[in-house]
Amino acid sequence: MRFAKYLITFKNVLQNEMEFRANTVVRFLISMIMLVSALYLWNDVFSGRAEIAGYTKEQLVTYYILVSFIMAAIFSGLPVSEEIQRGNLSAYITRPINYIFYQYWHSLGRKTFRLMVGLPILIAVFVIFKDYVYIITDPYAYLVLAVSVFLALNLLFLIDILINFLEFWFTNSFAINFIFDMSIGIFAGTLIPLAFLPVWVVSIGNFLPFQYTGAFLVDTFLGRLSTEQILLGIGMQLFWTLLLAVFAQLIWARGLKRYEAYGS
Amino acid sequence: MRLIRELKLAVLHIKMKTMDRMEDKFVFFLLNLGAVVRLILSLVFFQAIFTKVDAIAGWSFAEVIVLLGTWEFIHSIAWATYFRGGFRRIPVYLQRGDLDILLTRPLNLKTYFIYDNNDLLFSLPTILLAVCLIIYGFSISATDLNILNYLLLLIIGIVIHYSLVVMMSSINFWTIIEQFTYLFSEVADLGRYPITIYKGFTRLALTIVIPVACIYSFPAKALFGNLKISELGAMFGVLIIFLFCSNFIWNRGLRRYESTGF
View 1 (tube, rainbow over the protein chains, first blue to last red):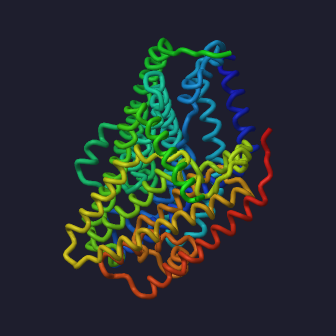
View 2 (view 1 turned 90 degrees about the vertical axis):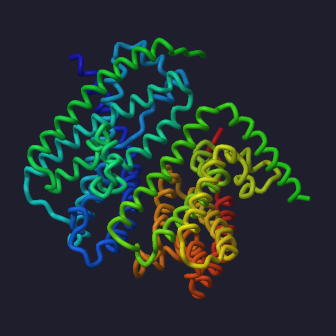
């Protein structure tokens, strides 16, 4: 019964998102614009080459399609910093709910809806570009992708909420969010696959959780990782989730002591 | 008289916004750190590609660096002036009915949006960084440079960019695009790459329909003396057509506007 209230939040968000479904469709369509330049750029870079950095052209095209789809589905800003700034947090802390849990289920609802809407779009893109993409027929790859997407979704939520909690100490934490958005592009491999990056960049990335929200998922799906590497990667996703969840709880408790709200 | 009044108003706005922004020193530091990170990431991206190939669609590393610097420069100028607070916020103004109060003022809204909510102070380091990148591109190039041509086409590029922003934001008068900022930044991102990577209809569309080629690639090509006469002609053609169309669509949009506020 304790979870019932969060499940209701999840359902409400799904219903709300359904009302504004056109917005979600537009979000996916906009994210596909990036594919135009990626397809042309790599087509030129690959001219006369069978593979670069271990990727064939088809694998790289599939990489960009998947990574832009995953990011459009599971990468979303939380309203937490705004609620702290405006003093709206008071409405939540007086209720018998765990605020982090509440935000988690709220965000899970939005992301689930996006995945549901995005999937037919993704299939359509694969059908349109069938001659340029790398088709995976192994059902095991789809299962591992689903698991790793779910874990990445949790990880991104925790990173996001931690950055939002900085609002307790700094006003306008959007600036930190801006740096975070930049960093994820490179360390998660959404800008370019990690195999193309200099060793020093990859070394920094190994100490951060970002690669487990993007590149790891797609490289696993493309069959570029061994079973040991996949298991290790999933283990790292769980490790970072646990670490950041504990950290989020601690920061929340500390931040709440600093929180002050004025007004009616 | 009207021009002088607009100029006075612009100076006043810039002063006010600068004083306002001086309060947020930490945000100033973070935002510019973010801009530096973005620039480094773009460099890492292209450097990573250039470790595998000698040229991208005929563009050398130096040429790509100048293109990247040009993109950053125009992006920062737009963000510091007309895009950030003015045209980007049109969907919000329309939803809230906030445009009414602006329309009752004796000013040209299309000009007002250039300086209203400007952020020149915070954007200054990014603009300087973009200039450094362009100079770096100059310095590693072995060919003769046409700096005057570059500067002229850069100014034309900014005017076309402004017209494109006006046209795209005017669509909101017919149907509100809530994710307008996201849409425009994705469209502008197409110009970060040399126009020659695009083929056939896509290249044509990116030259005359959404002219990112004219805005970013052509000035960079002109600097290295690679711009063809036909491309120069296309750029001037696009400039005239976009100036006319942006004005026309904006005025039609304003005529269509009906307040939804209280």
